[in-house]
Image (cartoon, rainbow, N blue to C red):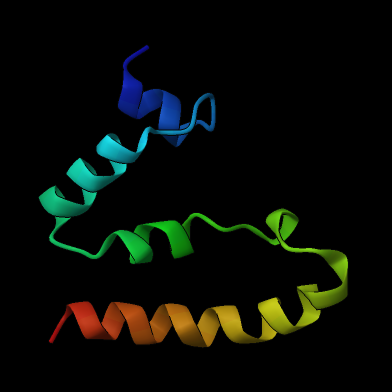
Length: 68
Protein backbone atom coordinates (compact mmCIF):
# COMPACT_ATOMS: atom_id res chain seq x y z
CA UNK A 1 0.00 0.00 0.00
CA UNK A 2 1.51 3.36 -0.95
CA UNK A 3 1.75 6.36 1.38
CA UNK A 4 -1.10 8.33 -0.22
CA UNK A 5 -3.43 5.34 -0.01
CA UNK A 6 -2.55 4.89 3.67
CA UNK A 7 -3.38 8.55 4.32
CA UNK A 8 -6.70 8.25 2.46
CA UNK A 9 -7.73 5.20 4.48
CA UNK A 10 -6.59 6.72 7.79
CA UNK A 11 -3.98 4.00 8.18
CA UNK A 12 -1.34 6.65 8.77
CA UNK A 13 -1.00 10.39 9.22
CA UNK A 14 1.32 12.24 6.84
CA UNK A 15 4.49 13.92 8.00
CA UNK A 16 4.66 17.71 7.85
CA UNK A 17 6.79 17.59 4.70
CA UNK A 18 4.20 15.38 3.01
CA UNK A 19 1.39 17.78 3.93
CA UNK A 20 3.44 20.68 2.56
CA UNK A 21 4.06 18.78 -0.70
CA UNK A 22 0.38 17.92 -1.12
CA UNK A 23 -0.68 21.51 -0.42
CA UNK A 24 1.87 22.82 -2.90
CA UNK A 25 0.79 20.35 -5.58
CA UNK A 26 -2.86 21.33 -5.05
CA UNK A 27 -1.97 25.03 -4.77
CA UNK A 28 -3.85 25.40 -1.48
CA UNK A 29 -2.72 26.65 1.93
CA UNK A 30 -1.67 23.95 4.40
CA UNK A 31 -4.24 25.30 6.87
CA UNK A 32 -7.02 24.39 4.41
CA UNK A 33 -5.89 20.78 4.26
CA UNK A 34 -5.67 20.60 8.02
CA UNK A 35 -9.12 22.16 8.48
CA UNK A 36 -10.71 19.72 6.04
CA UNK A 37 -9.10 16.83 7.90
CA UNK A 38 -10.88 17.63 11.18
CA UNK A 39 -13.77 15.33 11.91
CA UNK A 40 -16.50 15.62 14.51
CA UNK A 41 -14.73 13.02 16.66
CA UNK A 42 -11.67 15.30 16.86
CA UNK A 43 -13.66 18.06 18.55
CA UNK A 44 -14.35 18.03 22.31
CA UNK A 45 -17.96 17.23 23.16
CA UNK A 46 -18.61 20.57 24.84
CA UNK A 47 -17.96 22.52 21.62
CA UNK A 48 -19.06 19.94 19.06
CA UNK A 49 -22.41 21.69 18.41
CA UNK A 50 -20.62 24.95 17.60
CA UNK A 51 -18.17 23.10 15.35
CA UNK A 52 -21.00 21.38 13.49
CA UNK A 53 -22.87 24.66 13.10
CA UNK A 54 -19.88 26.46 11.59
CA UNK A 55 -18.17 23.71 9.59
CA UNK A 56 -20.39 23.75 6.53
CA UNK A 57 -20.26 27.53 6.18
CA UNK A 58 -16.49 27.63 6.69
CA UNK A 59 -15.90 24.87 4.15
CA UNK A 60 -17.99 26.77 1.59
CA UNK A 61 -16.04 29.97 2.21
CA UNK A 62 -12.70 28.19 1.87
CA UNK A 63 -13.73 26.43 -1.33
CA UNK A 64 -15.07 29.68 -2.77
CA UNK A 65 -11.77 31.40 -1.99
CA UNK A 66 -9.94 28.76 -4.05
CA UNK A 67 -12.13 29.19 -7.11
CA UNK A 68 -11.62 32.96 -7.38
